[in-house]
Structure formats: structure tokens, C-alpha cells
Length: 349
Image (cartoon, rainbow, N blue to C red; front, side):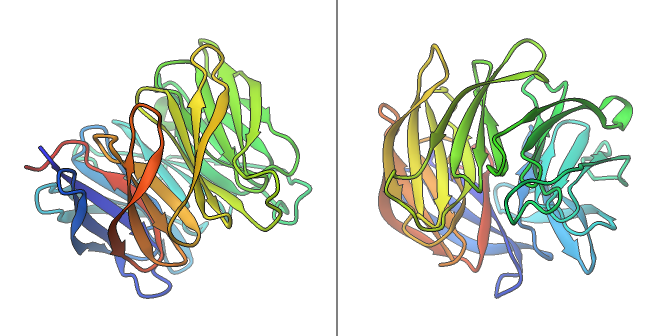
């Protein structure tokens, strides 16, 4: 079992035409079969549902934006369109799904939007909106900029981070209605962008774009009350040029956290203290391109795949599961403006 199906979300403002698909051969340690899977505007974030049968992509259509849903044929990579639902506040930048709901974050409007799902996984019209309010001290914090929305591990809450207001906001979503349940404030000007929950312990790692830091938060039984444990930079102490945090992921064993730095153009690797959740730097390695917008661990977690937006290359790294380190391999994909990566978890051979 060595062949896995992947998907790439892109910006279509240059040469790209939508969502692309490829395969990773984990025995040969190479990429194969890059093809266009779905033509649509600016699918800059994609996600798969839990059973891996449907793919969801954010989409831009003129002044509107929303979510497009597809059925997945993992063997061929084909995506068959189900439904698309648009709202009037422009294109979202992030989408997450559970069995019954898709939720988006919109950077431009600062809005979180809930889309109920049909029985076949298709999206239906938006049922609820939550408009963020506030500003921050940084030039880019002139208004709310919601950048991530996702579900807590127990599926009881939706959490959203806002780069413009330096907040993490928690919502309930019973009866397809977003109701604010709590919030956590970060250091002013830090600009939280993405987060990743620890798979086993009650920690969440929030990556800030403006300050390039990982904020470790602890929570108790109800994950709407967070406590700061640690703040650690992902950059070298002597680096003074522009850099922005982008993506963050935790290995499935909970031992390592990975974060991408755009500008410094690197992947930072941290080891997790199993008792405190605190992070210790293990490695920084070049992303082998400019502006690493996203990355993903493959289903075997023996590899890390990095999408460099500005140089248009998707790069394969091999991962040491024992110490967490990664090393660049020779296989790459050339894709215009790649910005999001996802894998179907089951092998296709």
C-alpha cells in the first residue's frame, strides 16, 4: 500500500485553473500524475469530510464567494460537482466540515458562516452568520480578518481565529445557528492565523501570522475557556526581515508540531513536552521555494509536502518519525500559486 491521492488548492489569478490532483508513491518517494481535477475560481482552501468521500473548496465568483462541494473518486482523482453556495461577502479563506455542517472564515469581511450539508454531502444555503468586531494596533488590523474556523475535537464547538482583532472566538452551533460561547485574547498585534489541536491532550497550538509565534493554550473539559501556556517564535533570533506565519500541524502521535514561515521560507519543527504541552525547537529547514503557504503530512506521516506559493513548486520532504526532522527529496510538482494541500487517508492501490 504505497500510493496516495492528494489535492492542491490554488489561486487562479495567474495560470492555475482550480483544484489539482496528484499521487504520492511512498515506496518510490516520488510525485506522479498531476492533473486538473476541478475548474473553479480561487479554491485557496480545500478540505475533505471524515469518510473521505466529499471534498469542499472555497470559491470566488465575481464579488461573491462561498463553498463548492464535490464527490471524490480517490482512484482516478476525479471530482464530481454536487452543489455550490455563495454569499455576498466575498470569497472565504478557510473551510472545515463535519458530518452535517461546513463552516467558513472570511478574511475580507471578518465573518464566520455556517452551511448545513445534504445527505449526499452537498452544501445548502448558509443558515447562520457571526460577524466579528474590533481592530488591532498593526496596519493590517484595521478591521476584523477571520482566518480560520474549525471544530473542537469533541465536535461540540466551532473555534475561529481572527487576525484583525487578535482573538480566538468559540461558538456553539446547535440547530445550525452560531452562538458565541467565549473568547480568548492574544497579545496585541500578533495576528492569529491558524490553529491545530493536540490529538491526545487538551492543548491547542495557535500560529500567529504577524508575530510569527506559536501560542500554546491549555483547556479543560469544555474547550471554550483557554489558558496560555507558552509563546515561542518560529524564527531565528537574528532574523529581522519580513516573515509571516502560515500553516501549522501536529503529528498524529502528538510528539511534534510543524509550522511554516513565509519570508524566512522555512519549516520549523518543535518537540512537544508530553507533560506541559510546551514546545522545544528541533529544526528549521528551507522550504525549497518562496512563500510556503501550506504543507501537509502524508497519511503515513513518513513525508511532509510543502506548497511554495510564489515559486509555484510543491516539494517533497522525508520525515523521521523518531526525532521529527525532515529532509528535502528530489521530487517536486510545478503548480501556479499553490496554497493548500490535502490527502485522502486510504491508499489507492
